[in-house]
Image 1: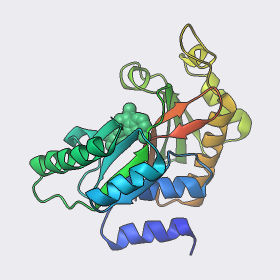
Image 2: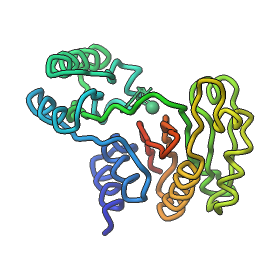
Image 3: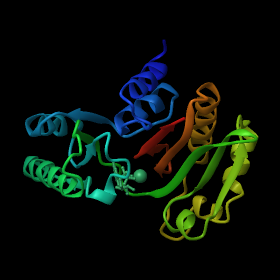
Image 4: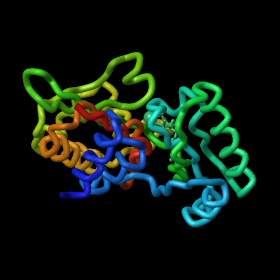
Length: 231
Ligand code: ADP
Ligand code: MG
């Protein structure tokens, strides 16, 4: 069994319909999709140890089979600068999550490299009942949430199609650099689209995939959050 299939079958065996963020990111890594460096800590001491290893600043996030939208329950704290910050955030997140759902099972805390702010893009995949796996691309935040400025293509996509998905959004000029926004590495985004296409074609048990957000830099791009929902 491949690493990816093992991750999927573990989730199914545990009766989960979605992957935990560290699992989803491992799947990404297997498919060459760049993600922020991370480790799962089981307690505060471990969190501090991992933060030092990853390098400050770091981000702490809840890892729980009962939490799918982490920031909705106060499960994400960014920009932690030292040991104290990490210890406080660990306590704070645990309290926040318990306040929303006292029965929430807490697997641990994801300690993660803090990705510098940049242009945020989104790559998604859903399963169309008629056409099968379908890819989505857009810029993050208001562009997708309010303006619905996104493009779709049926998977698998070719490199040309991936490029078209990017140039077809109305906000595309922003990716070429605008005022104080640096230009984004289009080739890096194309590669993420192609790898995501390969992933959803080879794993039809994926019902929904969300790389949201991906920080797009002048050189390279990094997935900051990955969500995978299974059939
Ligand atoms: P949610 O489950 O709520 O979508 P995310 O993991 O996307 O949780 O975190 C919420 C927000 O926090 C992200 O949209 C991003 O702005 C910020 N964030 C999360 N992880 C990082 C990171 N590693 N580096 C920088 N910003 C981050
Ligand atoms: Mg997110």
